[in-house]
Image (cartoon, rainbow over all chains, first blue to last red; front, side, top):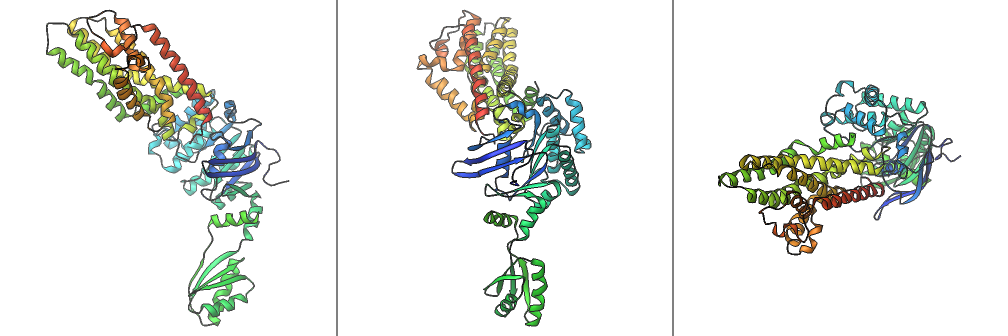
Length: 311
Length: 244
């Protein structure tokens, strides 16, 4: 089965494209999401937020379709009884307290006892101490937790979280990750977007990677990791004997190719650790000094571009 | 009702309320000074002149346009609209709640100065019969402006500027010489309702009614229809447009 599709799909995306004037934000994505936590991974500008906002019906698809529980979210507002959204931006009313925000969300969603529901989610995100203070005085991390509380107050089956860990400190992050995992384990469909691989790795069982508006890779975290391990890395080595060092490194199994630019040697390798082990002995043997040894091309964006080229 | 409560708090920011309340109190201050300068005679002319020309023509219009265009405009600017839209609510219910709040808030803010002026008139002349028509006309006028500018506030970022152009260029400068266009003016239609309620007085309405005959019923129906259209248009916009 195509790893972009879930066996037990709650959300189905078919040929989704979204453009704003001449700018294509999302290009022909087809995938599905089912119970459990799915990470939507990609560098900034990859189209994650556009995809999530289109899924929840805030944006109209330019092409393609989205179904949540078989329903188009833009035609049936009742579907929102089962959907919770944490938007990326700081979309909170600064004059409300954290508790009031959750209670407001509960009332708008038709929860029978909004005050009790708000209390429950305030405890769930560990915001009790600040719950009765206006959101304008919250830190970014606290506002994120208040948004999570408002998204969960009606106990939805589908939860869409756009960069929910942004601005949170390590302790808060660990708590939120545990919460998201518990929601996924409890049978809810949880989508968490992030541009940090390590973050997604901790929270999601399944990952969809996006870049330049396209789906670059999909699968479980181990499969994505394996795909990433094939990436050739470029390393910049600065030395006073570039030609001799380049010739020596070409003999090494870890080195894929080298190029010389003045006192710089650019080395391409599949195994960063092994390269590190051979450069210093080679320099010592040649009596060359090394003033710099640094990866050139290790950004997440380049990793994803590699995945796109490969697929 | 939850939307009405939260929107009221959003619209009633401290600086905005203070600024608009001060604007609302200019007319009673002018009336107090003008009527105090001529004791011993009635002050119907000053009252009608200031109420119709300034309080209805400028203050009510400006306050309601500012408030109404912020009703959905603030949600859009502060990116809180997604919070509201991702709820199991018909878009018409959201639009209706936004219009209701804009109307209530602008009416209450404008009423502080307007009611003060009506009470001052009663105190100076001992005539209280203008209090109720003044308040009813204010309620009708604020409804008319709110119905126009709630959808505008969502549609364009500079709705307040467009509102000022509407008030000062269209209502004051264009529909005055071209009296056939008077029915397109919320201000002149409000005046028609007020004139219909107070009956015959010595005050010369002149061009402030345009080609319309005094009467409150027609004005009320007209603005209720305008409100229904406003809710329908806003609901369609909320459904069709992308929410940033």
